[in-house]
Amino acid sequence: MDLPYRGRFAPSPTGDLHLGSLLSAVASYLQARKNKGQWLIRIEDIDPPREVAGSAAGIIRDLKSLGMTADEDISYQRQHTATYLQAVTSLLSAGKAFRCACSRKQLKDSPVYPGTCRKLGLDAAAIRLRVDNRQMTVPDNLQKTREYSLNDDIGDFILWRADKLPAYQLAVVVDDAAEGITEAVRGCDLLDSTPRQIYLQECLGLAHPEYLHIPLLTDNSGRKLSKRDRDDPLNQLQPVAAIRLALQLLGQQPPAEIIDLDTLWNWAIGHWELKNIPLRLDNEYIT
Image 1 (tube, rainbow, N blue to C red):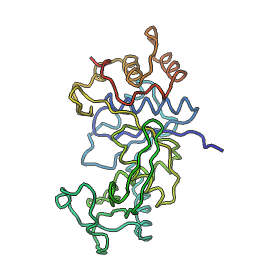
Image 2 (image 1 turned 90 degrees about the vertical axis):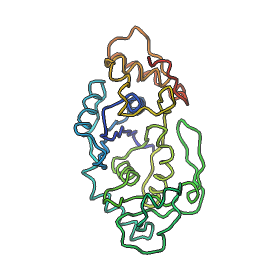
Image 3 (image 1 turned 90 degrees about the horizontal axis):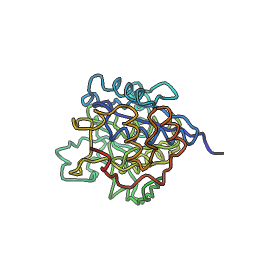
Image 4 (image 1 turned 60 degrees about the horizontal axis):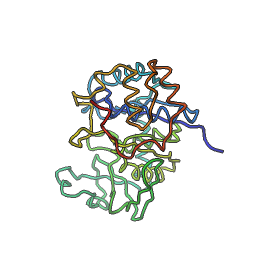
């Protein structure tokens, strides 16, 4: 029996909601609604040095003004540190992780971790997951299936940072499992995180969700749109116009005569088609 659909939008509080992240929010929201499931919001606030004061509240407020509210209480990763620590401790005890003293400077010329500390038995603060030397097939509900060599393409990756903070990969895997997420809809910038997360799920004995990566929105120079872009068109748009633009970028074509937000959402839910999402985004709608 298939599990009830549960999706999520998981922004980091490093700035205002921007058009690029709105696309992920809209796509994840419509996937949940189309599948008659639940849609959750998770604030990924495990990196205090990068956080912007008021960002989390602003993102939640903007989503609400755009007609998107979570079906359950909003979760905050900072509240789950003890759970992350329990997970990484279990991996250390099982010999699936090891402590690492390598600095970023030492590794700057190594795109894949060279295994420096694998067998040293150090008492360092940082912790890495020990990966197997095997191939992994990573399916996606929109992008093409990808093949990775865990040893050559991924390498042992960080679970616990030297500054005693949980790493992104660990926190996402633990939270997706705890929240029963059945499909993770997110941007293509996280494609290479997927084999890491699937492997970590295997090591922890957790079920993994399906994955759907939507194309990234870039500016005319090919640079990914970020929360710090002051020329982000989302800043100048009213809710109906913002959602209409997001739908158009995602390959959906709402009728021009719809001028009410609720009506627009009802149309979007009824007409949402994954097959219409382009594999590359066209900026023709951004002026």
